[in-house]
Image 1 (cartoon, rainbow, N blue to C red):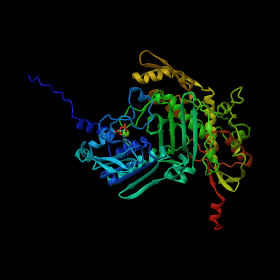
Image 2 (image 1 turned 120 degrees about the vertical axis):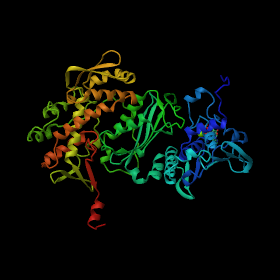
Image 3 (image 1 turned 30 degrees about the vertical axis):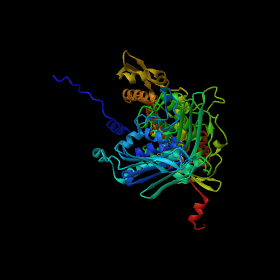
Image 4 (image 1 turned 60 degrees about the vertical axis):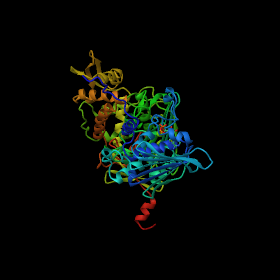
Amino acid sequence: MDNRSRIKILDESLCNQIAAGEVVERPASVVKELVENSIDAGADEIIVELESGGCKLIRVGDNGCGMNRQDVFLCLERHSTSKIHKAEDLFALTTLGFRGEALASIASVSRFRLRSSATDDGLGQELLVEGGHVKRAEEVGMARGTLMEARNLFFNLPARRKFLRREQTELGHCADVVTKQALSHPGISFKLSHNGRSMLDLRCEKGLTERVAALLGREMLMEMQGVDVNDEAVGIRLRGLMGQPSLNRSASTHIYSFINGRYIRDRVVQHAIMDGYRHLLMKGRFPVVVLFLEVAPDKVDVNVHPTKHEVRFRDQALVHNFIAASLQQQLKPANWVQPQTAEIPVPRSEPSHPAPFVAPLQTSFIREPLAPLYAHRPTPALTPDSVSAESVGVVSVPPPGADSSGPLAHFDDRQQYFSGLRYLGQYHNSYLLCQDGDDLLLIDQHAAHERIGFESLKAGISAGQIEQQSLMFPEILELDFRSSQALAEHLGDLAQLGFDVEPFGGKSFALKAVPQLLAGEDNRRLIVDIALDLEQVGSSGGLMDRLDDVLIMMACHGVIRANQALDPREARALLEQLDRVDFKANCPHGRPVMQRMRLVEIERLFRRQ
Ligand code: ADP
Ligand code: MG
């Protein structure tokens, strides 16, 4: 029997390489860590130079506070940091870095050079490091600031080198990192060059708007609007720029979300943003947003991932609902329908506190003027059959006692937009032609009415007018521990939406009744999905999605079709109703309700310009 110990403590440089496995995935990770250090050092000028997509060289220079002779050596040690000193500091972070392992990791997997000066005497210290070992140290002439250089990334780890992609791909990732850092720090000037060619040259700007214009282009900026919602009581704030629904992309690449100044792709935040744009985008489309979420540092833990790409919120549901409601609030009046101006107005709105599932909807429709439309058409075939056009009408009646908080409470001048247009006529029995100042507008009557109908049906639901259908045989469902806990906490919300779910011992539940609208659907599956949503993001879009799908279908059947002649009175009634609903710029499938042609464009067509 061999009595020697089999367990060994790994040597320092191997430890660093292991840590590097988590921190340094590719050149872009090095760029991220080095630029973050420059930002933490208070620099207002950061220069990033790359060669061969960063595989050959990554060099980051800054004019920050620099390091003295001792610190230049210390900074390369693992767990060496100037940013935190005690455990409590972890919950009051003001810097991007704090783990003290980036430099040690990077230096262990590259040929590393670092020079820094913390004084104004024109002198600094330079170190040459190879695979984590200092090869040379000397004094050099330099201004205050720091320059770090990582060459031949993974030169000593051929297995990892193989994972590097084409130069162009790696370069793309690096540029992406710099873009995100530049968006969150408009006050810092950034330069990025590749193989000696300048790729980005951003001067320091006054604010986000200017930075977005410089990075994403003025044209995109024109289609964006400011948002700033602050709930001081809870200690949460959302500010930034959000694109109008017509500005959308096929991937989520243009969802820039920052949490306390840090770019983070968080599941809860992403989900909440998509929820904010619910039914304003076509399926598979993503909005363009640059959003900064600020939460008290003790309400969010950033120390859950070595690269800090993920965070953990203390109260996920709160964060989720705050974001979704803030965006919806902003999108609701759909001021997009009016021509945008160059300035970006940032309305400061009070935070809204939505019900867990259903944001309060304030709308009413199918009032007097449009009633004849229904009257002279055959009763539309609604699905499910139990819902008739009459019941659609019923839900639109404002709840009793509706006054200042009632359906029309949010009226203001902006809400008179469509009714204030000059109606010119109907084109092809499908489009309403209107004039707005010098502009010609085409309004899709079907899309418009679909939105009106949809909002009205939803208003009915939020007013609690949900018909329930009891199941003859209650369905028993068994969930896993986490899902069952999440579901148990939200039984009241489910009841509000027409689901009667009762605990059935252990992790089981009995589904006894469902909203009539969803009778005959696979509600069992739906509840399981909802429970999972609740568990993961603290809020369920899944349920509303399913209900909404049915409502959309009903709205779609119940409304004016394309190819239906409208007399001017009916057309005007439609425009008036459009003013009364929220989210009026898009039909619930996300299609635009309106297109605008400017006079100059028309004159150009006739060669008058
Ligand atoms: P962390 O950023 O988590 O503290 P790093 O390994 O990235 O850990 O850096 C270690 C330390 O080196 C930092 O805490 C900081 O004091 C110093 N440092 C790194 N980069 C710079 C820089 N560009 N300017 C000044 N000091 C720096
Ligand atoms: Mg760092």
